[in-house]
Image (cartoon, rainbow, N blue to C red; front, top):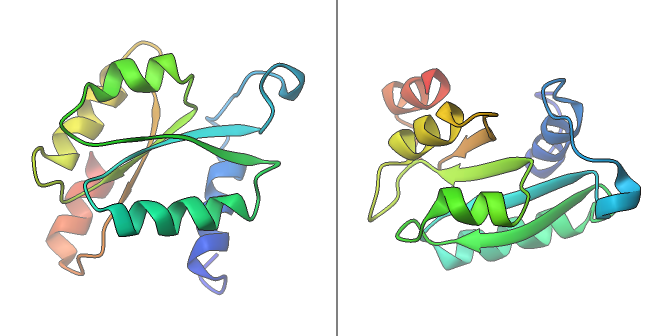
Length: 127
């Protein structure tokens, strides 16, 4: 997927992951329901616009500031995927991702960052 634009890569990753098993479309609308966890409103609006391009397949169902109870929001909104900002101001994106992955059944988590520090990126991948 390296040749695709970043927004296409993200959408393709969400739609082709074999571990994402959303409820049938007739019950929910879009194929993949996404909750965004992040402090930055500009990034949230950019992701919302990007995902809106493929709204019949991917739906951003909520934006949760890191200070709120992300777990209950993701459950209430019936999220298939939770997009977690790595560098949250009020919480650790890595710790939050680990909590979401520890749930039964676990949420699918995508961590995003603008940080180019390879060590931090590796930590995100290992979460």
